[in-house]
Length: 236
Image 1 (cartoon, rainbow, N blue to C red):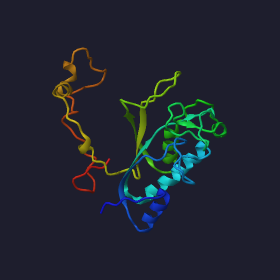
Image 2: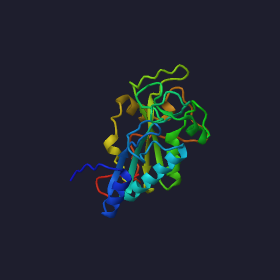
Image 3: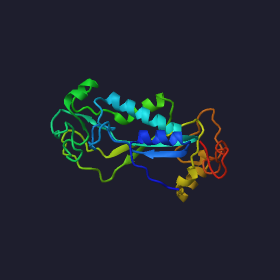
Image 4: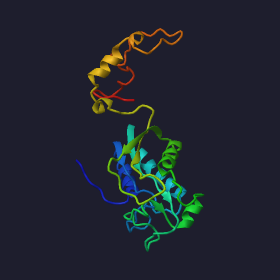
C-alpha cells in the first residue's frame, strides 16, 4: 500500500528499519545548504559550516543504505551554493531563498570563513556530498546534468546564470537492479546505417596501424553480462 509519511526523515527511516521494511530505490532532493529556513529546530540545510552539512548528509544516507535492498539504488538531486558576503540576510541571519540577489548564499559571513571559503566562492556542495558518500561506502555510478531551459533569473553581472543541477546515481552494491531497456530511445535510421558500415568504407577514415576492423557491431550485439537473478530485469 502506498503511504505518505510526514516527519524528520532520520526518525522515520530509523522506525522503518526497526520494522524490517526494505525499498528498491530512493529518489530524493534534500534541503540545499543555506537556502531555506523551514522554521524547525535542527533542520537540515541550516548547519553552521559546509563540513557539518556534508556530515549530516552522510548520516542521512547511511539510513537510506540500510533501508535499501542489496541491489538498490539512490538518485540524489543537489544544487550548489555560493559563499556569501553577509549582506542581504533576513532576520534569521539567512537568505530567504526568494530574492535572486541572495538566492543560494551561505550566510552569515563568518560561516563561510569557517569552511575556508572566500565571499562569492562557488562551494561545490554536490560534489563534496557525492565524494563523502563514496568514501562512506556508496558506489558513485554517474553524475547526470539536469539542464534547465528556463532557469530562475539571477541579477548577477559577473558570471552566467546557473541553469543546471546535478543528479547522482549511487548503488548499494557493485551489482544492482537497473532497467536500462525502460529508458532507451529509438535510434535514427541514419545512425543505424552509419554504425553498420565497414570502417574501411567510410570516407575520410583510415585503418589504424595493426588494427583489423570488421563490420561495427554496435547495433547488432548486446552485452551478455546483465541478466542476473531477477527475471524480466537487468542488473548493471
